[in-house]
Length: 453
Image 1 (cartoon, helix red, strand yellow):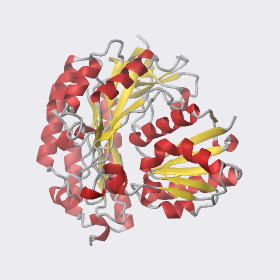
Image 2 (cartoon, one colour):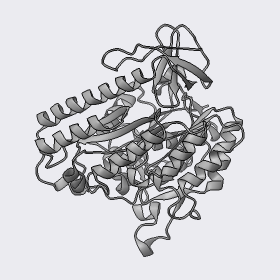
Image 3 (cartoon, one colour):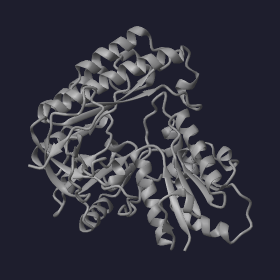
Image 4 (cartoon, helix red, strand yellow):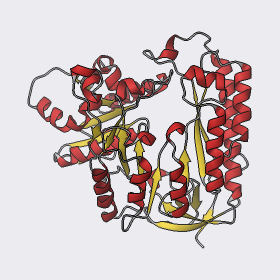
């Protein structure tokens, strides 16, 4: 029996896509291997958001071929959609499949094995066929399928992908060019997959999408995310459901009200900001200002004081001055955030920002990164200390997700605090209550200890 291994880069939507690829390959009769070294087929599911992500993909492909030269390497995902030819030229690559072809990897591999086609074959549909963009070239496709997600690749919490693509045109973002326009899954398909995962014993399920908050705004009968969530939290046997990132312009206050009513909806929201300077937000083509964003986070904090609130920040956007950066620092310090994800600006050819003047010198961007990362560490530590001595609902995670050196168990609380239960080897996928300890280190980098009440 042939074996495969999947390497995944990038966002939760990519992780969900990898789960679908995994289910397809298992269904074709292949077996999953623990590492690339023993695999006959290595699938690399790529991200292309930054130059660094591209570099990491190329390094992974070269390493996989070097360590397992007989394996057939398949490259798919956003980098494959953006620059298939470059990836097809890498040694060891037998197939490059764009985003629309991910579901067909098993069939494409089978067809390739029965032919004498040269290495590096490319299967990449034009963007118009992925998303329906382009008018007469293709009928609009506003729906996506919901493949089975039970094969999580060692992760405790399966991902259900409700939505793909994005209609926004942020100046720095390549994603609409490689993912297409916004499409959503049918509510009945989402609910059916949720029921199946509940029946298989999963206790926390994560809902994800490229632009999750835009769910249902086009093409699936008008059901928006809050209404779908109401149906999900009413499902018998559901433990907990968690949302991935939601853009601020699509965050509906009904979600907060539902979380306050139902213990099944995690008190954790990730809402990208990108900059705390209104001038930079305008240059980024972000459709909000800091006043609107701040009001949103304050309203969530007022309705759910225990909620974990995270955000994304880009430093070094072209034209970002010292004053712009200081505005960002002050704004971040004032927000009720519990953690930050911080990225340096990465120019992507094909985006508006690629040709903007005023590139920030690398050393300046590095210094700004360090400062914002420090704010993030302080926010995380302060948030943890708020809950020291309190008991919170949590789920136990698998050892592959960060086991404890002392044989203990890593847990994730409903409001996104990672904690460790020392000396207790608990099975993953258990809903538990944990009392958060006082620890966690002065920098906020260490994981605090927790106990079972």
